[in-house]
Length: 292
Image 1: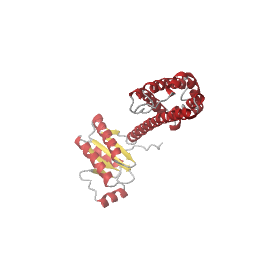
Image 2: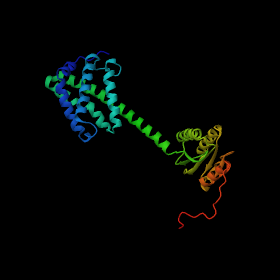
Image 3: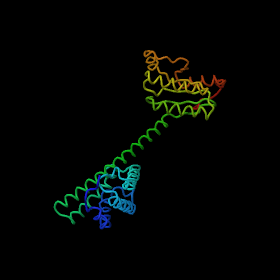
Image 4: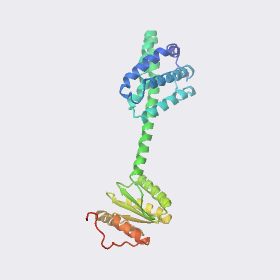
């Protein structure tokens, strides 16, 4: 599609410094509460670099089809990097988009000074349409960047909420708190299997005393985890079976065949140590921690 006939590229090229100074001034007002995140010198450098790329793109790539024109790739790449950096620095969507939308004001002021009548209206429309496209592109990149951050944080929270601990030589335990879904089960399984390898564990305890409810899907997730550990040569024990959970399991007809279950972590650890050949015995005459 051919570019719309416009004098806009020549106007930008001949007034670049004036546009830059005015644009930086508007940016400083918008970002005055972000002075701790971005200095004036950094802001001016960003604006100057973009304006140079922008001026080159409108001269060589036209202004009608920025999505498919190769001459806009460098300009868009700059905007992508800027949007991602601001998303990571916790800038708001409007603060990020303002980098482009605030450019309208000095451009509008420039064409209003240079043109009149229909020619003014045409140039104003060209500027508005072009800045809107670039602004929307900036917002989309910002949104994708924030979504990536959220996904990464969710993954980290999943890993933190499912720690696997070494309880004794060859015995590990994974206390599970909260709802157990497919994504979380995958994290538990990966962490558990890795700890089995790292600690050469032959016994693993899955404690579900912190799981609010157990339904058919939750039980299936647990069975899959137990099966995966078994393939590694490790026996799993499910502990924390509260009376309400036991009733639910029976009512749903869930079969936990070949799965060792214990009422508490204490019972599970005692069973695991016994299976490992350890003998637990109370020491005669031992004092309680509070005894004098």
